[in-house]
Image (cartoon, rainbow, N blue to C red; front, side, top):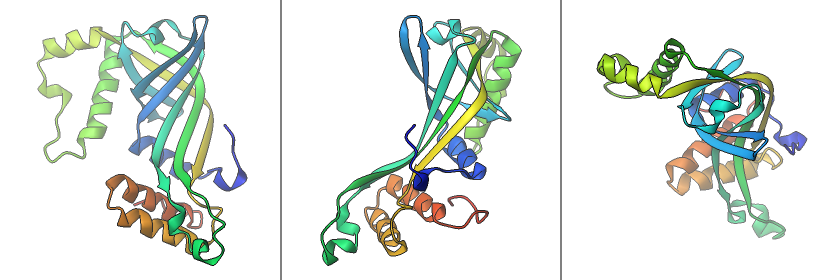
Length: 212
């Protein structure tokens, strides 16, 4: 991935936060049949990413192949109308701000019901924690859950390399970043508001915390 120094994110806590808040990954594998792409929610567990796919998914037969998981964080269009430089000299253009993480590794398959059920439970528990009345896998009938578990296989990616690119206006003067944040918040789109928080956090000194 092209990585200008200004946008290369090295803080582990920021990478972890993005993977937790935006767990839906695009998985890319090059097989003998060509490039195969899938979209799956993944959960990081130490030095691996874990999830599950339908037994009929082509990933089921690709154990051992190199794989890349792409996690797309907050992103939005940035208009040059927010830049104070626009009224000073007019030499401004629009851009697109975003945060993305690429996780490189090797694909492993787990055709094991207990392993799959453990992942299903941890994935649902992570997301259900935000609900007013969290649902639990244990609430579903056991025969239904068992049947579901046999229809899927577990996937695991052993992490070998992580690339994080946060293009969040770090190359702009502080006042310009503040005006971009204000503009995003004024648009009143929840997605824009999330990006505004990430832009603010990215400009803070190391160790001062992740986006709110």
